[in-house]
Length: 292
Ligand SMILES: C[S@@+](CC[C@H](N)C(=O)[O-])C[C@H]1O[C@@H](n2cnc3c(N)ncnc32)[C@H](O)[C@@H]1O
Image 1 (cartoon, rainbow, N blue to C red):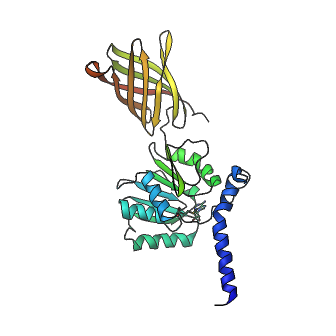
Image 2 (image 1 turned 60 degrees about the vertical axis):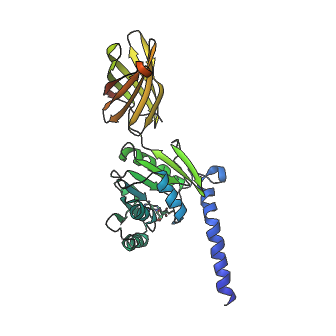
Image 3 (image 1 turned 180 degrees about the vertical axis):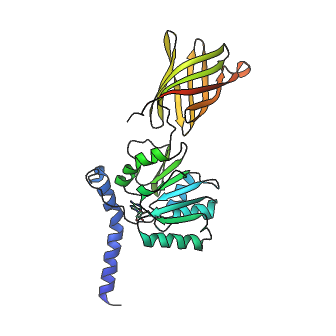
């Protein structure tokens, strides 16, 4: 073997080893880069098979899911979701050759009907059908995608980001196994005013509720004659909302689902033999833009 090909191969290996560190430095100011000033295009760097499996595990992908990989490379995430977990889905990529390879990989795995790939820019892609979105993209692109993800995805949709998380959005879970993966759950939009009717042990009650929201974090309470009952332990996970109010000597634990301008569920008061469970329902009176 001549010296030249060996030297070139070594140089290629050095570049390949250096590339992820370079991308981190460019994308993260803490690592010496200048996020916000640089918007370098996301290059092709496939997830390892370990990363593919951890992303799908973190999103708890199953047969009812529609998995969408934005920047799908050779298609390995959607093909694995279809072949191993019975899901369906699609991927998009700006590299036409990778799209052809991904469709060929789906065909070889016998899942071409359930895993399709399109030559398309992420921002021109309709993602409303997704129940799971996977991202392995540089920070700048992930952050530019944030408004689209929040505007188009249904409450409860899981987003798993590999290596580069979404700025200003606290992940539901962060897992590090060889690489780091962030799980986000798209929250329902609840900020605004609601009229809440509930059956409590003392009788029928109506509350004027005010909620403020920053992604999945909510605060608020109920206006009552002569006062305000704050919501304690308020939680929003996708379309599931929970909170408790304290009225005179008892706490009342509300648990429900949000569907557009309606919330409904059950409210539990008391414990043990004194426990009462009743229904509640709230309709939106005023929608306000969420904070931040
Ligand atoms: C780091 S690779 C990840 C590939 C695959 N998701 C995986 O995890 O193996 C990022 C991919 O995003 C694609 N990409 C970058 N910008 C894009 C855009 N604006 N629209 C569509 N694809 C894009 C690149 O061509 C590349 O294939």
